[in-house]
Length: 125
Ligand code: HEC
Image: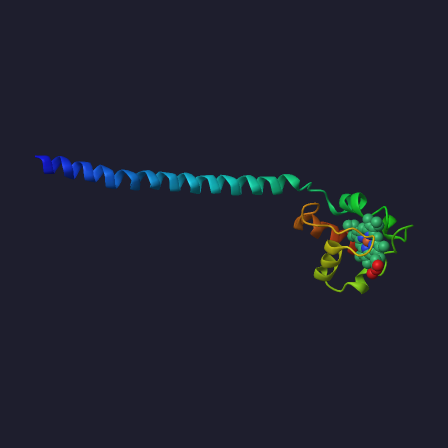
């Protein structure tokens, strides 16, 4: 009889922690998932979803007024000759140069950057 109690006691002592730690583990996974979700929501909320023209007026027009030379920046009329690929132009705008500020992903996401590039390429049409 006693050995049967002992078996039951051992069962609970051995199994219960396993089950509990399993729960703790799934709690942890749930927490990580929630965190990921809130991070992607945060990234989406930072995006203003402005179109190319709006982005240009917000971030570029002061120095390159409507694509022309301004007090602080050169004309952009040769941009298509100077940057043959969108990748090269994107790289330049992302990094900035001298007084021209870098446009990092937290101020302009990839989708906005694509719209801006399309706008800049057609400034002189
Ligand atoms: C504070 C002023 C300033 C702002 C704001 C600014 N730029 Fe500039 N930009 C410059 C200056 C100065 C240069 C010349 C950099 C150099 O070559 O040293 C330049 C150069 C460029 C060039 C290269 C032109 C060429 O044909 O070689 C491009 C393209 C450009 N800017 C695009 C942009 C875009 C797009 C934005 C907005 C996201 C922007 N700039 C915002 C000042 C600015």
